[in-house]
Length: 64
Image (cartoon, rainbow, N blue to C red; front, side):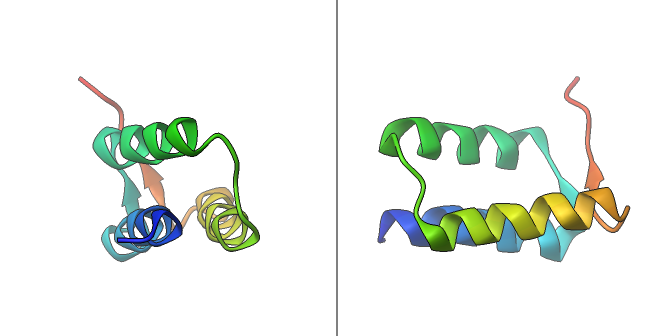
């Protein structure tokens, strides 16, 4: 799978679930660290996720 597709897939999963789980957040962070950069498509996907969270449509699930 193309690296940008991984981040976009994770964002899509969070949007579908209407929550950002610790697992999804960790996978996104790991992928960004591994890549060392962010493409425009990845940036837009993450920007959408943050906007949805700001609007209260996506809930951040705490880790236990």
